[in-house]
Amino acid sequence: MRKNNFSNSFGNDQECLFFQGSVCYRPGTIAEVIFAHCLSDLHFAKARRGEHVWWYPGEAKKNNSSLADVVGRATRDSNIGIVIISGDFTFAASHDEFDEAYKSINAILGTLGLGPDNLVVIPGNHDIAWTRAKGDAYDPSLRVDTAPEEAKKAYANFYRRLMKHEANEDFSMGRRFLLPGGVVVEVCALNSSSLEQGEKYLAGMGMVRPNVFDDVREQLGWNESEPSLAFRVLVLHHHLTATEDVEDPGEFSKGFGMAIDAKRILRDAARYGVHLVLHGHRHRVFIWREGVYQLPDQSQSQWRLGNVSILGGGSVGSSSVEASRNFFNLLSISSDALLVEVYRSDKGGAFQVMGRWKGDLSMQNGGLRLGEWEDKRG
Image (tube, rainbow, N blue to C red):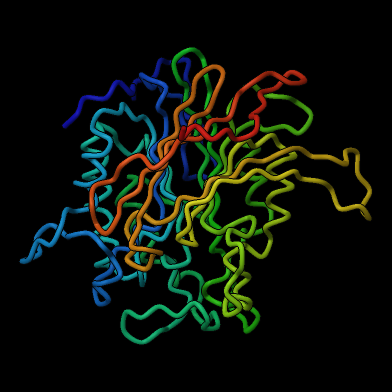
């Protein structure tokens, strides 16, 4: 096991802050500027075993490496302090799939020398059993027909086992991390698979329940009128903008993978100074930046809300990917820049750096500003 310099010890003057009575975020210390290991769409599968591309420990036939092995080899020289997973741990939200996810994530954390305090997780649409599909099939076009408590039970048990505390009602999280040199990273993670029973909702749709963002950002101390020097990250599963040049017409009924309240979430993010949005869902690696404005027909104190950068993680574990390519991202931060390294695996091979993108950090109106993406592949 790698020894990591992340500290879990806290002085008497450092209070452990709770919200919703269940989720805790704490100040911590990370040794180097590489701060986040971003994974999405792991898709551990059992009955539909072929939906997950990597080997499971204990399987009789070893075709390739396990997810923990291949990710560990790719990051063995990186001192990572935070692991962020943006949903779809499973294919059909079954208990045995969550068990494989639990074992794999614990192995990754062990390789990095980390624990639950270094972990940020939210569910994806495959992790909440909104429909009574036959067997372990998953059909995102089915109507939501399962009561919320029953639909969420398997994920809630997985979360408790992984994080060592109960999830809150919304499966949301807020965490604050202190990096060397005084850089503060604040993470607001929202469950975008919060649907309701009724014929107007389909299992593959995305939606964040009203007021959940406000609940988390209030506990993190985010204030619209107070600029901050913290680097603010929003994590959810579904997209906040389209990711394809031409969308599949068959995806129309599910909103092309976007949360149905995407623009509200983007406006909230920009209004409260979010610098970077991380998402998964569509198995497409994606880098974007969007200017955000108020609706013109509503009264407003501010017309232009700001710019938000967006990073889509692709899929680290699904076999349903374009050209048999899987991805994950590493984020590094310094006092003057954010660096994104995109890792790619081709046809089940080793993960290697595909490219690097940088955004400059600067001060503007008393707060931290993330600049335009610069391509650093050359």
